[in-house]
Length: 255
Image 1 (cartoon, rainbow, N blue to C red):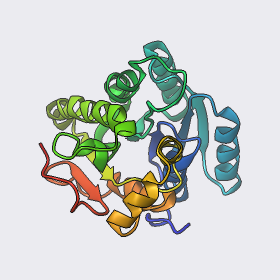
Image 2: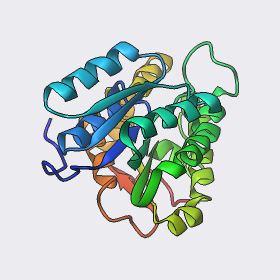
Image 3: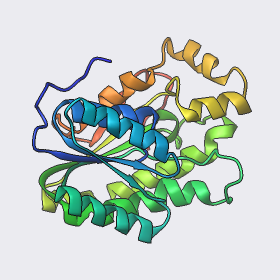
Image 4: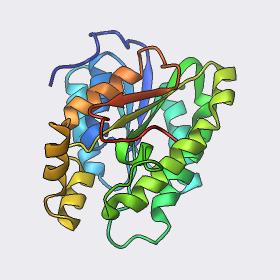
């Protein structure tokens, strides 16, 4: 995959991407490492994948730290950042990529706990490690970002509502982030082919992803969308703190 970042452009920088053992998170962390950043690969239960990714980065001359954490557990989150600080000294980039809510066997409020409460707790726990000039990126979907004005498929509605609630809660922290010199960007994209969310949606509603692809004309794949997330970590912060990726004509105005 072609990197969106110039070689050595992140030399000396340190980045942590939540949920980065696979999918968009894994490709994002790989782009950062390829540009010279020391990276933290975070996982919940895919340790083998996380360590395989770290081995690949280190084989290419990069620096990768693997840290497992349950983001819905404040103590686990605190331990993750303590480990990151000990090994890297701080952070320059934090990408809030991990999300969920469609997994089987989870409690009824899991989507809100992960997509809203955990996102805020992770950012607040990271603040002591983030200095002036650092950047926070929150990854979401158009289906969540525009949920107040554009209904989504029923199978995804709970996740969409919880992710929008998470975005709103994070935006409330922007004044504090501004005071600290920390940039904040929301990256919103359409459904992404090849993600676990797309797989679960297709399983619950066969044909849903193809229907969305037909309506949009095309959907980004994992590496393409990860490239946009990586760019959001280094390019100027938009005035409204939002980068909309891909087709948005089918979505109403933001509320």
